Image (cartoon, rainbow, N blue to C red; front, side):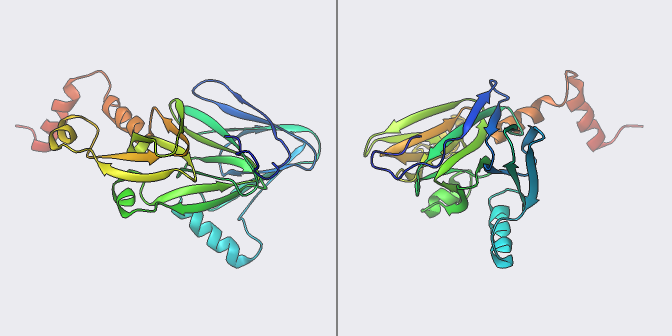
Amino acid sequence: MQPAAGAPVMAAPLDYEIYGDNLQVARIRMKPGQELYAEAGKMVYKQTPIEWDTRMSGNTMGEKIWGALKRKVMGESLFLTYFRANAPGEVGFAGDYPGRIQAFSLGAGQSILVQRDSFLCAQSSVTLNIAFTQRLGAGFFGGEGFILEKLTGPGTAFIHAGGDHIEFTLAPGEALQVDTGCVVAFEEGVAYDIQFVGSIKRSLFGGEGFFLATLTGPGKVIIQSMTLEKLRRQLVVHTGGGDERQGLGAITNLLGSDD
């Protein structure tokens, strides 16, 4: 997402390539003096000119503890891993499950709201913070709770989410209704709310639940075709293998044998 006309000057551009299809890797070629930070455990590889260090963000102990607590609420780890280039070198990052990587080029003060657990890495000039949904309904019924992550520029930031991604540019007042767990990211000017789908029958038998997220423009919205929760449900369904007798065996074990 590019900043609107008249936006402040961007940070120094980052040389990167998003490689692959549904198991993507962000390949970032760093210049001397450039620094990135990443969610712990997201690095796939690095070349030797790239130094790394794991630490809490913040300048004082109080800031570090508060930052760690906020990160825990966001579903992230307590620590961040920092990467600094002393000479030209490359480092690669990837998500934990099949999906795609999305890059955002943010101007100074420009923000994007993204789903919790999605942060991958960013230039050190980008601020990662916690954000709350503005309405109680969105928090209780939104599938993702009250918590969102807020990325603020200047700089380039990367997130990871499931399946394929679809991007919409909403005009002022234009609305898009989305399965609550499928919202990946949206610009700060987009209004976000949760609404009842309007029919008990549709809710019970339509397979979509009772609520949908409604996003109203102006601004850009990104949604995902596969949520982590859906992937987990499918894995549970298929982990029993091909033996259909396993379900009967489980019932027999519960009730006890006739011996």
